[in-house]
Image (cartoon, rainbow over all chains, first blue to last red; front, top):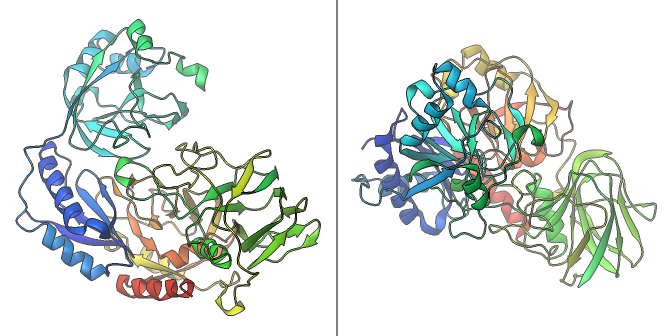
Length: 234
Length: 306
């Protein structure tokens, strides 16, 4: 396994393991994360994984940048991919409806097909969680079928409802909380994606596998969903 | 328990500490006092741990009344602070007697003042910190990230040592306009030669588009010539360059990952200075080697030990 260690800040180093987004990166990323956490232990402030990189924020009171580099090399020596743990499986209920997912029609139009077909195609795939970011518990998942890929909205919405499920390029995600957002919205989940009372806080973690399950409005409401139409939130 | 009642506040008056750590991999931002140096001095004046909860007042508009006789400390910007109309200069601890009113009016020098109380203000720890992040609904008095507002009560439980002043020679110089230290990042070689020259030799003006997430800088458009980037972790102080070529310094409330190329990251000491600058201020950048910046930071932290 080859990798590069890059300088990013006074107390941060970037470990670059790959140059492209690929689902096959994950077993290596998970293994590297685990090793780095174990070797740095209390000398680690934060470890920020993304698609191809792991940013190591070390405690500058305990380690110099050079000592941190040495620890990284030690942690990643003879790294083997982690195929075993492979993340948890989730089924996330989604109410796919134009009132909460206005871009369903846009996607149907682009693909010259029906809204029902878009829903079927989004929910039949199993997605991998690549990274968390943007907001607490916001999980970047993929890869969405190529034909469903859609660029972000030219003008992001000021307010996107919590639970909104969207597509941007070949990624899909659900907004854990109300926030601005530029993704193409196709539905809403009642699942609580970030919960400060939950162990580990975030429902989804890098390496997890996710399948979206279409539910009707009644089920969505029963599961605690809020069906306020998107335009009412603006 | 001592109480202070807030009579006036703004969305820019926030309870802060050093920030939230160990949760960045969940997409949770750092938060915390932007001018960490002034926060630490405020706590030092009262014998508190350096990262005890303080009030960060940006630009003024903040006022409170003591419900008991209190000892507090004020550092950072000179926001025309007054006790019952009498001027109060920052960088000292002071007494606010029952019924007296402390007001922070408007910036005379600097942008952010820090108010500390013995033992730190009492607030729930949310994900290990009380740093207020409105966007993420984390921290603050209510634990939901709300800014301080009229009617809120601040409380503290500690007892104050005698009144103290930060020695003049140790106070940050808010008029210092020397270049800000920037640790060079991995994409530095992918900017055009002329852009590299301009990044470190031209004036950069702070735009009014500035908040706790980031500050935009206006100047010559910098040209990135490298390949498009895949999102990756963003350190505190990262100077990212979006396609319009105008750099953005990412601050405590930044998003956790992002895909714009970066010149590098400002040092913590440079960030503390930047936090005191108002829109329209002019800054320059100076490249610094990571190891040297690290040594300087370690040496600087020794100041607070005594």
